[in-house]
Length: 136
Image 1 (cartoon, one colour):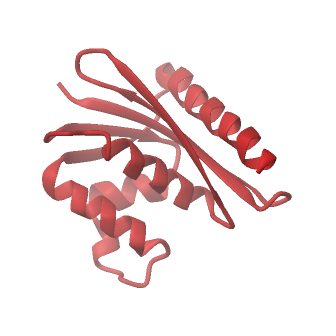
Image 2 (cartoon, one colour):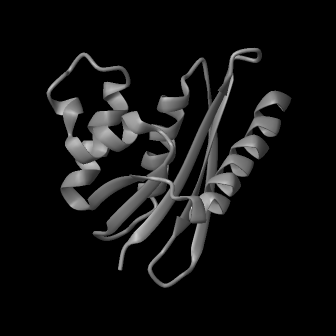
């Protein structure tokens, strides 16, 4: 059985602040929740940060299914296209994901409608992170 990660990143141009959230569901059914933020970012970069920080929680090899609405992330992970073009944006983060891919089996999927609750909760985590970020 695999670990499932639902991610959401959002960036607000008006405040120049971005946040991400992730819901991690382990094979035993237990859950972890993460959130974070970054200034002057992009939504794609924030979702990559969500993936990286979620996978950093794993102690041993995992089979990981990532759910997102971002086609760039889905294609980048499943087709490894980022290896063919070293001039891609966010190569620092793509390189880290590829490094994790040597240890973990990682696949990405478009979020099916029956799982939108998890994406909405990841979005909530990101928004809560935004409230804390704005206070800073």
